[in-house]
Each structure stands twice: as structure tokens, then as C-alpha cells.
Amino acid sequence: MSGTEFRLPDLGEGLAEAEIVEWLAEVGAEVTADQPVVLVETAKAQVELPAPVSGRLTGIARKSGDLVAVGEPLFTVEPAAGAAPPKPAGRRRVLAAPSTRRLAVEHGVDLAAVDGSGPNGRVEAGDVLAHVAQPAPVPVAAQGERPPEVRPLRGLRRQIARAMTASLTVPQITEFRQIDAEALEAARAELGEAGHRVSVLPLLVRIVAAALRRHPEFNAHFDSERAELRLHDSVDLGIATATPGGLIVPVLRAAGSRSIPGTGREIERLAEAARERELNPRETSGATCTISNFGSFGTWLGTPLIVPPQVSIIGVGRVRDEVVPVGGVPAVRRVLPLAVAADHRVVDGAELGAFATTIERLVRSPLLLLGEG
Image 1 (tube, rainbow, N blue to C red):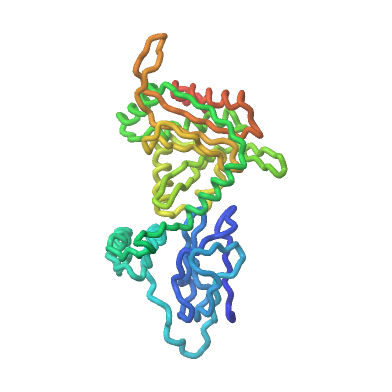
Image 2 (cartoon, rainbow, N blue to C red):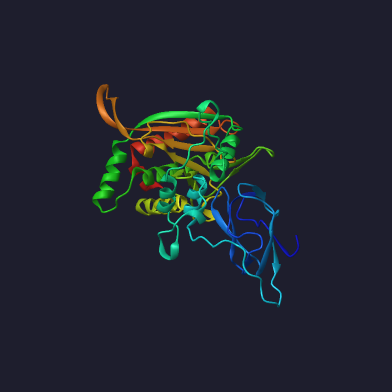
């Protein structure tokens, strides 16, 4: 290839590679400086990479679906000379948000084939779904049977698969509790009466942040190669968030520093940015611990998995009515299921039990948060 070679840049902390989602120009096309040429996806976000100079796209090093390491070649542009540029050979630039492009990739849809209903022909998510809904011919296999469908893992789902595989290297222990949540729900109701409509999650975030400050060995990263445990001063809490493409974990910085309503607003902002794949690298990296609210899906309880280098994760289920003993008498109470997992290489069962007990005490008596500095 001749011309200016463009290599995959460092797209953020800890990101060593990216997957090519879509080429936005074809070989032979005339491109201008800063014109998006390729859409790539990392574990954090989708990013459009532009041409470094104006000229003709003379070479493409990889195809859609390929993984490219930071520093490896992506494409080459022959800078424009003084002569009149040749006639553009590329296809039209399709206007679409990154989330819409991700949806198209997941359904195997070429955006160029979709009629956009948005401003200036912009392709919206609904246009992609309508295109998918159109009837397509069904391939006929031998003996009249339909062949099995094969779906290679791509993009975010491939990154999730890698993260979960890494979690298998952690020998984790898990503590389960069922906690009386009457006071917690009462606190949420009082906030609602004061005009602050919040879910239970912001309260739980504040509780977990307080517990991590009291048990700093759980707010840490473990370097297994050096056998070092790094304890963090700030509680930067990962909030596991379901998105159409899979699970994304934005990071709530200084989790205990905001008011409970302010915590709720920041969680909502991060969740929306996660769904739209618009999080920046700082908002998706460096979590010191993670909280997974699988109760938001109606799940009673689950087993959360630690993602290294973190050493702990807190899972909470759906608050529901349970018959429990109160003063030796059966009573119906609101109960919160809790699962706390830790890396057994750096903490033992006794320490895990103490950490879970601190969380339980704060759930039972959230007014104790007032004493947190």
C-alpha cells in the first residue's frame, strides 16, 4: 500500500484491541481529512475513526468482524495531489447513531440497504427493525431440513465472553443473606414523599460504599503475577447495566460522595449512556468493586462473578414479601436477597462474613449512613 498509513490508536485505558464493525468508505473512494472511514468497537464503546488526510483510500488492512490490536494497520490514504481528484468510488455515507449501527450488525443488516426515516435520511433503530421484519427466503437443506444456525460472537458479546472467561481464574467464595428491608423501603418511600423519586439501587450504592470504606480489603485490585493487593482510597463502583448488545459496567466515581437523589440521577445518566454506547473510557474503566442488581429483572437471587483485577462483587435480588421470624413469631416482612462474592486468595470466610454483616446492618438501619463522613 502507498500513501499515509493509519494504525489503530489507543482508544482508552486498558484497551488493547478493537473489532471492526463497518467500513464507511470503500477502496478507491475520495475521503476528506476527519471524514469517518471505519467504525470500530471496543469493550467500552463504538468509535468512528477518521481519515488523517484528504485523498484517496488506497488500501484496507482488515475486514468487518476482525480484531485489530492497538498499533496495527487499518487503512491507507494516498494524499490528494494538485491535480483534480478522481471521481469518488465509495458508497454513500449512511447517517446513523452508534447504537443503531450496533443493532444493524447484531441483525446482519447492511445500513446502506435500509431506508432512513430520520432527518436527512438518517437511519433510526426502528428502520433497522422494520427491515429485519421483512420476510426473507428460507434456505432449503438436504432432506428438506433447515440447517442449524451458527452465530459467531462479535463485538460486545465477544468482549463479555472474554471477561467471563477471565473470571474463572478467580477462586471466589460467596456469602448469601436474606435481609429485613422494611427500613430500607421506608427510607425510599420518605424520599419519594419529599419529591425525590428514586429506586432502591441508589440507597444500596451508598450502603455498599460505606461498607467498602469500613472493609478496604474488598475495595481493591489484586495483581496475581506480583502477588500484590492494591487498596484504593476512592470507592469507584461498577454498576452492571443491561443493554440491547449485552452487559456493560459503567463506573460511578466516588460512589459515596453524592446525595442519594444525586446518586440516582448519575446512575440513570450512566445507564442511558451505556445503552447508547456513548460512554467515554473513564466511565468504563477502573472500577474498584461492582454491584449487580439482578433484582431489576425480577430475579430473586443469583451468583455474581468477580471480574479481575477486582476482588469483590455484590449482587442484590428483588425485594419481596417473605414469612420470617420476628421475635420468635412468623411475620410477613419485606426481604432483600444479598450475595457477596470475594477472591479467596486475598480474603477468608471470616472477613467476607464481617463485610456482609456490615452491609446487612446498614440495610436494616439506613439511618446509620448519617454517621458516615
